[in-house]
Image (tube, rainbow, N blue to C red; front, side, top):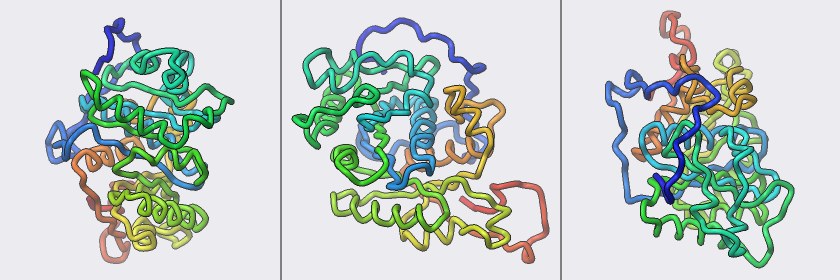
Length: 308
C-alpha cells in the first residue's frame, strides 16, 4: 500500500524476512479475508504489562507478511511504544496531531516499515505530549474515515489502545468494529479484562476475541497457573490465540524487530502468526487441556497442550 510515491525500503535490521510458513495452516499459503475492508480492530487489555503492544506489533507485521496492507496506529498520546517495537522510532516526524492541526497531510504522517512494504505506522502524537482537548474522542474516527477514503485503503487498521479505561481508551475504541483483548492468566489481569470487555460491548463492539499471553505449560500442569480454557470460561469470549512465555520476546523487542519475522520461528512467534490467520478469517480456536495420564508423554512442546 502506498499513499504517495515512496523511496525503496531500507533493508531491515534483522536477517531476510522469512516466507510465511504454510505447514501450520493445513498447507494453505494465505488465509481467506472475511468481511468488507478496511477492518478496524482495536488491541486492548485494561491492565498494562500484559503484552498488548507486542501483540499489536506482531499482528500488524504478520498481516503485512500475508500481503494484507495494514496501518498500525499507536493511540497512546503520551507514552507511545509501538514505533520502538517496529524499529521505526527514528522515522516518526509527523503524527495524527499534526494532520489534525493542518500541518501536514495524512499520507505524510504514515511511516512505512523498512522490510514490510504493506505495513505503515501512524502515531497519535509525539512522546510526552498530549493530544489537544479540542480534538476530542472522535480523533481516530476521523483518521479511520480518512484511511477508508484513501486511493489505496488498507485491509486492516490496527489500533494499539493505551492501558487503562480513561479518555485515551475512549478515543482508541471509538472507530473500532472488532477488538482483540490481551490478557495473562492471572486474576488481576482477568478482572481488568472482564471490565474492558463490558465497556467494549457497551460501546457497540460485539466481535471481541481474547489472546492469552505468557502462558507457561509447566505451571498449568502443576495447577499453579490457569489454563487457556479456564481463562476462556471465565471471560466467556472466543479465543483468538494462546501465546507461550518466550525469552525471545525480550530480544525481539530490544532489536525493534517483530517476533513473527524471526527465522527460525519461535513458539510465541508461531502462536501470533496463527492468531493473525484466525483474525483474518474471523475464526477462533478451542483450548483443550491434555491430561498427562490420558496420553503418552511425547514431544511437541507448547502446542501439544492446545488443539486449534
